[in-house]
Image 1 (cartoon, rainbow, N blue to C red):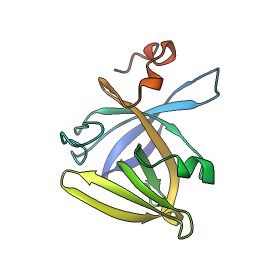
Image 2 (cartoon, rainbow, N blue to C red):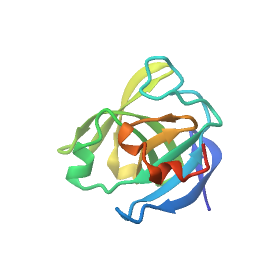
Image 3 (cartoon, one colour):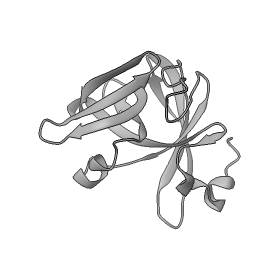
Length: 142
């Protein structure tokens, strides 16, 4: 178990299961704050909700697939945030993120990011129907 700081406050980041078909390791993290708790957000997340996430690489293919997805960014200073990805600018090494409560967009340099995780679900709500499978239904987190 690693200590990270989600939205500036201590939070636990737990290891979970590996999908034996794909080799993908899934984790879950408890959130702080309500920056994604809005009817306009692609997923409504409140403080204390659990996020099911999987890590992705910083490769060009993975980065270019991120716009429209909700991600958790783990920074080198051990803080982290979860936001929707709006745009990835490979030439400048930056990623544009969107917060829904309050509504705002901002840029983050990937030089400051240590870990990049795509959010697959939050408490009762799945982000993408491709994860509504027997693999995830075997989790007892939600």
